[in-house]
Image (cartoon, rainbow, N blue to C red; front, side, top):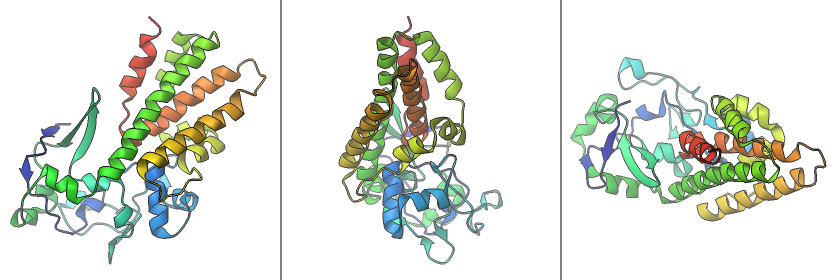
Length: 283
């Protein structure tokens, strides 16, 4: 993929045409914070939203809505499950970060956050050609207008939590006298699994703990993620530290790997970095 890296001062045709073209034919992953906010917008529970509107083990939005009527023919695909052909996005106020950023992307390279668009040319130029008749905006102006800050805080908090889980798996393995080489092998095997397979390894109770924590959806992002992380840590202690089985700590380490990998795709935590964390301890 040809990424075009951006500065916040770069100017592009970023005034939305409101055709809904970008609501069709994509893969949108969401975190527990985003799921909670969407459920709040819909006046229902995160569990019902997850079970009715998400796939890939409950971490990716289904695209099974009406076929798009705009943009190039190749892009006229099913819409996001939250999209209405009459009223547009039904959860627009609480839409995920990926939707707020589009047509831009966000990545973390050696701890530094950057923005990009995923092709040599801005995607809007082919999807909504009329965008060129509307006012241009700088990347910084566009990000501010899309109110990305809270959702970026959530993504960064969850990414830090995912990396922390990898470090915890290493510490547990060392403490229990387990093999770090075996941990690295296990990680390599697990990272190729899709969300449904990861969820199957985790069991439903752990998937629930990760995707639908019993937290107030109105909490600020930093507080939501911090409380979620604490709830997961408390559950770990309750499940594994009181388990007399000889392999309890090894299973705890593997569970941390699974949780970190499940989180990674939605929040920009890089499995390559996770592998480095593990492999550095084996040498």
